[in-house]
Amino acid sequence: MGKIADSIKEKLTEAFNPSQLEVQDESHKHAHHAGARAHAEEHGSGESHFHVVIRAAAFADMNRLGRHRAVMEVLAEEMQLIHAFSLDAGV
Image: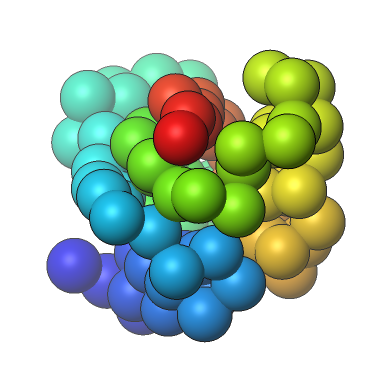
């Protein structure tokens, strides 16, 4: 994994103590898209697309939107560096 993926994993682990956490860098699926090279040059990384699966007891009292907001808050810095992010969050 690259430095952005590592940062995502580290921050989510610290914030939510998940029972399951998968950080999937899907950037390779989008390498041919317009702007992929420019994104890599601008942000210093080819890491641009991520899918995260996270299960944590910390989400027990949150609805789907609340879980998404909580994750986005923790990953605010990383969101500035990537193009796309999908999330599967549950208990």
